[in-house]
Length: 254
Image 1 (tube, one colour):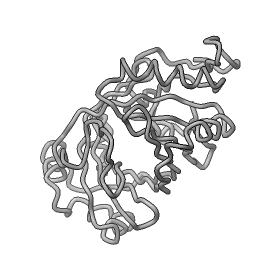
Image 2: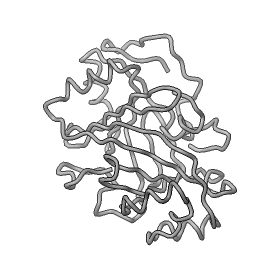
Image 3: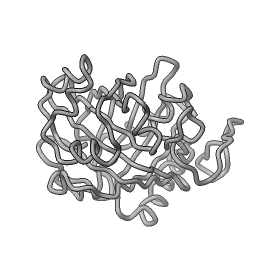
Image 4: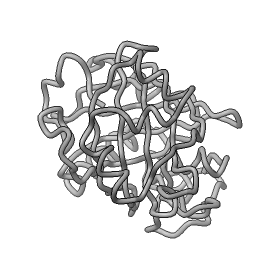
């Protein structure tokens, strides 16, 4: 999908071979597809701290930006509503025999600002349609120091006292974990239309991806407003068709 510009037309010659709707991360060798402290003061989407550790349906607007220049222009336009920036480290795990990936399940441990915070997340079956991602998600905080041990010995993640980790072992017959590696992300949070807008700069060994994400139960109402904001500022964008995890597994940027 080419990038769109301020006049509603398309920019650039880049194309996407994916269809409008797809499992996030389709094409990988195995088919796949955060909140602030103190708690966010505007409307949280579906996975606010009070929801945890209950499984919820995560719904996110996901727009791709073509360049660092476009990313920085979004930050400039939203500077008056800037809240904070997180330095994130994301690490992923699978069963030693691919028990999770074979079911399109993603297990992640994310660190914030080195060891200020750590969250373990389990995602399942995410599908992206017209720039809106939907998929199940359950997550909870863990001790950051203890979480660093997961990277050395992934099986220690199975020992944490989280109900969804216990359920994962039973449901998917996981007895041992392996590390898949990970990537870093710089996320800047802004207040926008009563929601939290996340502006991402995701760094892989093979390149960098720039994205906007807004978690919301109202994507049909909110997405046109976000697109209008970008077009009116002459900021090119396109609908995202893959997750960061899919980019990581496939070693691609599109």
